[in-house]
Image 1 (cartoon, helix red, strand yellow):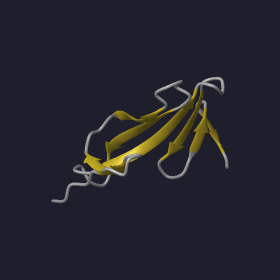
Image 2: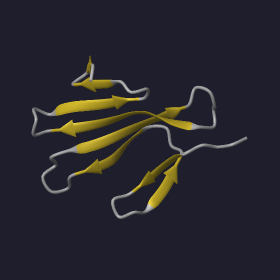
Image 3: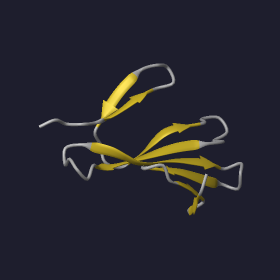
Image 4: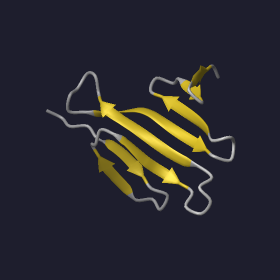
Length: 85
C-alpha cells in the first residue's frame, strides 16, 4: 500500500517530509514572538496509512493574542468562532 506524508519547504528552500500525527510548530518569530504558526495533522479518513492536515493556526499576540484557524475544507475561525469570508 502507498504511504502518504506531509511535505514542507522551509524558508531556506529545504524540503522535508514527515508522517507524524500531532500538532507541530511550523514557524515562529524568534525575536519578539509577534506570530506563530501551528499545523495539526491527523490520520486521513479514507486511508489509514496517510496523514492529512486538519488545520493551520496563526497566533498573533500583538492583536490581543488573536487566533486565526484555517480548517481543512476551507473553513476559517477567528478566536474559536467560525467566520464567513
